[in-house]
Image (tube, rainbow, N blue to C red; front, side):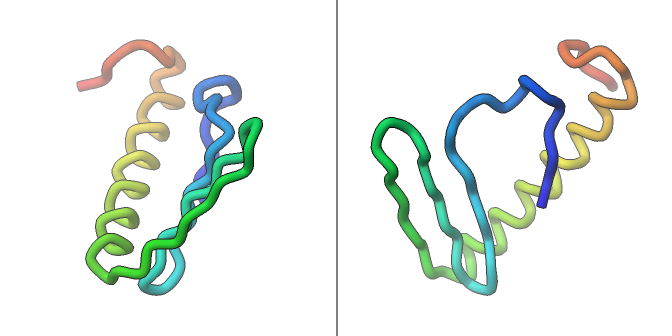
Length: 70
């Protein structure tokens, strides 16, 4: 599970990856969800989550959310 700085991710959509499945759930005006069963998509989502966590960690360490850190 990843946590983002407060106010940075504002969409009412959650993504979950478990086993070979990826679930996408929208908690907007209408609740909508889907489950994708694919080992390749689940692996890709795990990689994306890792990249996002690395980026968020860098952003938090820089203490400037809109600054790109090289």
